[in-house]
Length: 210
Image (cartoon, rainbow, N blue to C red; front, side, top):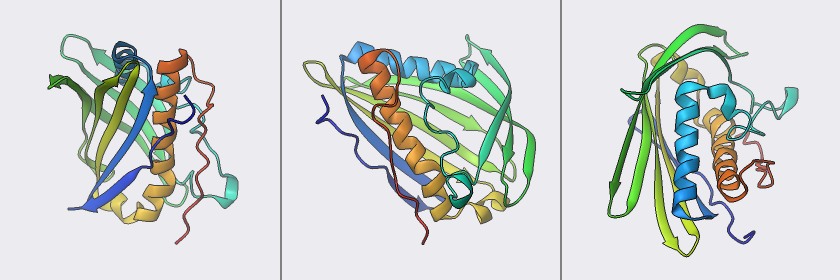
């Protein structure tokens, strides 16, 4: 249903924390959308490279030398997952061409999953303390609407470490992260509707330069 387009990403910045929210309406039943959310969280904790084949598709380097969409790049190096505890960690390098490369950053995560009044709240809490990141968490809210129509909302909270916060201005956050959040949500929508992702809901956001 092409009329069901994605809503914009809305971001606020309070207490040194970015809060972003994004919603899509998916032409698929609740069970199918829940499966897509499960696949996303599982891949995030166990095989994040696989996300690049569907959820992160079309979110790579986009702007070339004239764009700051690629001001931050992540290289995934190692993953570990304990299914009984729903706990995992990833080891990454964070490349910031304007600054330096932060190597062997270990980020732990725990999954949580509850359903309240027929709305599922499934998310991941991320733990890392250092110059890059103080806290982060993301929660998918899955709500059945009618027939085969399902609402999927993502709430993301990110608080950067002191040093990294000096670099990640609001403009950088919007250019680097907001359009990617839109594309990821579009991809999850397409995955639930079609069983694969060809980026038919491709995000073409303008670069913010103010």
